[in-house]
Amino acid sequence: MQDIIEIRWHGRGGQGAKTASLLLADAAFHTGKYVQGFPEYGPERMGAPITAYNRIGSERSTVHSNIYFPDYVVVVDESLITSVDVTAGLKRTGAIVINSGKSPSSLKPFLKGFEGRICTIDANRISEEELGKNFPNIPMLAAIVKVSGVVDAAKFVQDMEASFRHKFASKPQMIEGNMRALKRSMEEVREV
Amino acid sequence: MGIRERLSGNEAVAYAMKQINPDAMGAYPITPSTEIPQYFSAYVDNGEVDTEFIAVESEHSAMSACIGAQAAGCRAISATSSCGLIYMAEMLYVAASDRLPITLAVSCRALSGPININNDHSDVMAVRDAGWLILFAETNQEAYDNYLQAMRIGEAVSLPIMICQDGFITSHAIENIELVETEKVREFVGEYRPKHFLLNPDEPIAVGPYSTPVYYMETKRQQAQATLDARAVIKNVAQEFAAMTGRQYGLIETYQMDDAEEAIVIIGSSAGTAREAIKQLRRLGHKVGMIKVRSFRPFPVEEIAAALQAVKAFAVMDKDDSFNGHCGPLFAETAAALYAQGISGPKGISYIYGLGGRDVRVESIQHVFSELEKIAQTGNPGATYRYLDVRE
Image (tube, rainbow over all chains, first blue to last red; front, side, top):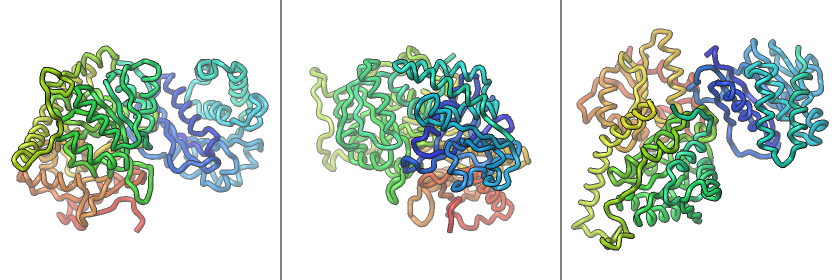
């Protein structure tokens, strides 16, 4: 199992956490990995807390349960850290990446004594500055790639550009904006 | 060599449908199978298939449309889940008794109530006696592979066939998959050439006429025979499929059963979770194993009995309760299979698990094995009808 990296995403309905988990699965697949990307489904509503998951490894995971002992946790909405037990089961050797303009050390008191790496990235600000809208999921995806190293960073940037060129063929400004957001996030993510 | 991809289970089934290019699809959307007709209707719209897509107002009509199309001499398909499947129930029986090899993809979901959209097997188990062949998949790969084999099996014995996977757990999860090249798929599946069909001017026939007591029972006996005949057909088609892809299938799959003292019998995606549980327990020296049921109809009586005959204790895992105050449906049939084969040594218990999407963890399966070890040691099964991972 050591070979398989497990990631849990916490977000709110409409923020794109599910999409980000599927994009991460895609990116890892392109580097030859075995992947799983799946959200926890229920009666989704805009703004309600949602969870999504990734398993990524050089061998196939046959497990079809949710993830209880993740290596990494991504929190797409900072307000969740006081309402959801985001560090539940998170390994000490792992890391949590939170969408926040605050410093990692200032969030530590909310993380129930989590002793691993704490990282923050202001994905809302990056998204608003680069895309003019609050779509935090792409910067968050870039941050977890940087922090976890689960996918080779250079290959990831290359693949995402190709994927944006395909997805936004008719909106070139979205390609450039997303690429800037992605690269900035990889540079600006902070850690303690 | 195959094509390496990553797809959800629903995408994989829709892709198999596209590769096969059947004649007609009658479908009505219901979560979590909605994506199947959704993706497929896009293939129709893009001209990637020349299938007649029949949008209907209910699942009852979806199956009725399939029956009409298949009776006319077409290959007809549909997809559904949960209440949609049981709303089809009346027409499922008609499709089977009319001996129409329709292919139905099911992304399994709990039945209401309470209303719930998540996975269990109560939908398929509710129609298990409708006369359809029923194959279950553990993964997106198996859902795809079963679908490619479905028409060969159904058409060989003139019975309709359900290709089932677990709703959301595999239907909506992206995983790696190896696809077969489309030319190879079409060569493998072949053309549908029914012996008798409605639109044959040289042989006017009636389909589904009234059957008096003089004929009804013979019709049912023939259905029973076709189901029996399907056992060999499923194995033969699997052999040909293995020659093409290298992937082996049978009526059941056994995992670590050679020297197993405790075993579980299980269906669907949780078999993968059980695999990991067994791997970990084996490392600690526990002699544990698993029988995964791929073919629920026909029921693999001899295979299951042979696999279980030497174990000390076994648990049958049902994602459905029969509410008979006694056991789940897979347990009932497994126990009957053992009795029919004259095997009474192993102690067996029935576990109801994973209802309405209750997550099934590696630890859940390990708990079952720890209970089985107690039973094996004491020879006392205790309560034989149990619920797993439930608050009481």
